[in-house]
Length: 290
Length: 249
Image (cartoon, rainbow over all chains, first blue to last red; front, side):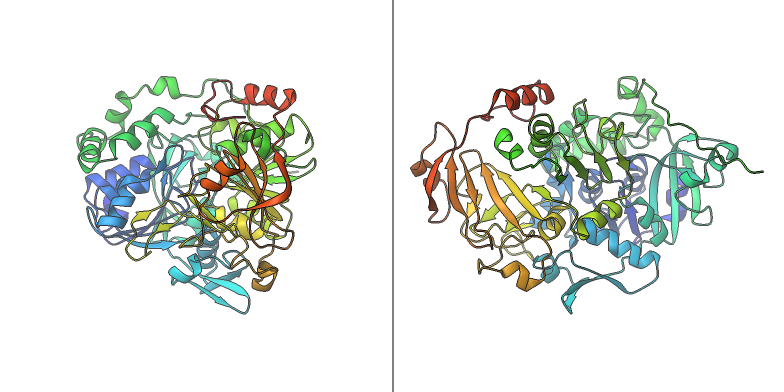
């Protein structure tokens, strides 16, 4: 993880993360960005439950382009509020979107066009305050948002970068296709035989993926279908402790700065209690040929 | 509040479900008067029966297992963009007399007093679903004369036909359901009026807690109490009272 982040996410990069909304959020990668003291990032995502709040609180972020930023089950993002209201730990530029318009902004980049038109956001002040949006001819034109890198957590991937994701996908697909490059973190590192047995489930072509990191539990506390439940209590604890700067700094020391890697992190949570124990496999698809 | 919200769902409706109370309202409707309704979640899911396990978010594994469709968000939005979503639920920090919602900024957006989390899918539902409802705690600071920032447009400046004139696809808000009352809107937009008061509360109390001179509909009465079937469904889907604690059904 440390190597992937060091090589592919420089200071000032535009990074799409948490594109699955509440599931499959690459927290381990985000925490590594904080440990490496990355600065001036632009974060791109729809909701990215609590992760963006942590990166903002840690001072890594210059701009956010997002539809919603907070803690989904607990409400407001306290670091986000402090940054917007008081410039603590630094001021933040906000490009507000709706869920639909952030998706369109990424599809525009994926298709390499300047913008895409839509009916959503007509009559909303978001068009007035986000200069990436413009109204003309009765439509809202959403400018392309081009991430340098998308970081995606997947259930499984092979060493060539072919990742299988399942469950609701949010805007993961367009985030990956819009980005210059994709970093995949995964629960299971599998043989190519597994991924290629179901090419429909491979979300991005291997040509987009520059790094695969085997990082089990790398999405905790967010859920991973088939692997981990959501750790509601962890989100609650984060919400309470991040209410003050001191509380947040204590939380950050405990869970990020003084925790060298994900293996150490997982030893400190009750990972077994969160693991999904009842399998519910889908029927295999037959890709047979004559 | 949940039972009242559930009655907004008609049988056969495709409902864009939010989190918290709307998801429970959907569960109640599906198991009482709307057995063929379907729920659509912006994360990229369609369901018939609500998930049996507790949900902290719509992306939780129990909401995915047994879904009718698991897909990408832009596909869920495609249904709404074509006008296929009958009803949406939107939460908000503030709503005004014309049903406009603010979930973005209190104060100047360039230097906000309070930065709220933002639209999420709220603005999309407000603009594209055929009709929508918002649920809110009934407080003067939440039901305001005019919101300072319109995240999710309702009936705009209150002029009848405002939405049509602005090119908004859906019909806009039909009700504001609060902890004290149900407020409704005229057919072609305009200003919210008091339609019914929940049992145990009075018109005066509602007006006192509303940030504008609330008009009272002729014949405004008491909100019907929850039926046995509605109560049974609430108990079934929220057995611990996680979402409904401290609120009347």
